Each structure stands twice: as structure tokens, then as C-alpha cells.
Length: 171
Image (tube, one colour):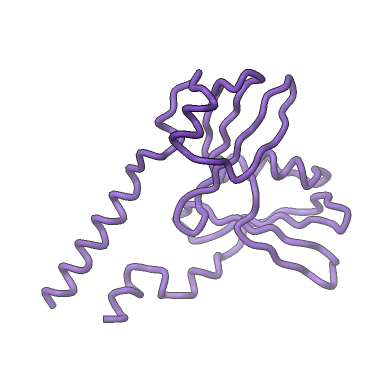
């Protein structure tokens, strides 16, 4: 029993340590240079042109892809703002009629893809931090236009191997 308690405490400590990540985009101050961004975070997972000559840099992060940071930089490469976009407020900005590129620029690349054959629709899935263990889904037509969006249960919720309880049951 003591081994289980020690394992649980060690695992909880490791999880908490992961929350204080010095490579988090949130530690960058507005005005940081492109070189400082790259030195701290590495290469972005995506780049999107913004109006006015700026660029949005995507940094998909987090356990199971539950965080995506978008860093907006001006035409000179200076950081304007850094925002974690995988949240319900941002998801609610995704509307029918938007393009595939609009979705990428807003919330980044999906964590996984699906396909609904009878609707001929590609479904982009986004995991995010939620107390209800759900994910966000974007349904795209064959031409890359958003047809619908929805929240649904994250399939990982059915798999105990991804939870602390599942790890403890393995012992």
C-alpha cells in the first residue's frame, strides 16, 4: 500500500511540475523578437498569414494536444500577443461557412481526424482542458467549408490507461 501512495505522490508531483513549463509561450513579453520566440519555443507547428503583413505562429502543446498557443507577430517579427486557443470561448467563434484555412488560423491543426461517410464530411477533433472530458469537433465539407460544429465525449474518457486511476490499477 505504501508503494501505491509513493507512486501516486510522485505522479502528482510530475503532473504539477509539467504545469510550470519554462517553455510556455506565456512567459514571453509583448515585443519579444522572432529570435527570442524561436530560442524559447523552437519552430512553430504552423504559420498563418494575418492582415497587415503579420504572422500567426501555432505552437501545439500539452498532454494529448490539449493546448495550442497562437502567437501573433507583426511584420517585423515582434510579438504582439500569445493566446491559448483551445477553449470553449474560441471554439464558439467557429461558424458554418468558414473555410478550412479560417479554422486553422483560429484554433490550429486538429488533434485527430475522422470521416463521416454518409455525410461525406471530414471531422477535425480538438482535445482541450475540460472538467467534462469532452472534445470539440468541426465538420468540413469535401470543399473545405465548415458545415457544423459540436462538443462530444472524448474517447479517451473510456480508456482508463490515460488516467491516474488507470495507472494505479496496473500495479
